[in-house]
Length: 241
Image (cartoon, rainbow, N blue to C red; front, side, top):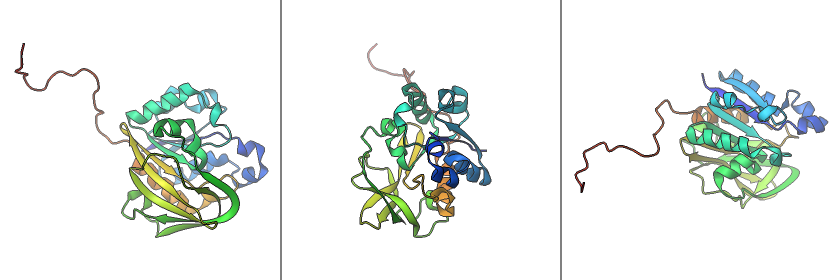
């Protein structure tokens, strides 16, 4: 069974009654719940737990890490970011949601500012599927329409994605690369844009389906990891002695 850890800073839920009403178990709890319903072994971790809930034991037993953050990116300890980065390089999958684009771990893996335009104006978002054969969009139609979402607009300062899965259009006119995949070391990374905390986005069945598909896509391959460092030759070297 694929083991998933859903990480959330869990600050909006404490400060904003609108968010608390939408997600009484926290955004992390809502996501873990539908992942469990899809057959994954899903647990949660939050910012204010010891080691942000991402102990060596938790990370070692995580196949895919789902990350949501917004208010407190700077409070995430650098040593925890380094551990998460190493686990991704070793093969753990990482799914970064919405404002996690500014998280330390995503910026570390991307090597860019990951900055963008934004606007909160209750506007419609239409996420167009631009890679219809990709497993992340299995069961999804030509587009997903959200009646109200926060706008993210280009230019999105990220490296060129390995694969572009979704492109969003917003009612105000902007577009955005809203579903992007990357490989880093032995691990897979998926950035998925929707999920502003004051909207019921994670209760949308199509959004849930994308995240479920992404977990399945990002899980580690069952193979031995490459060996790094000094290597003995496979064949006899007949050069100068």
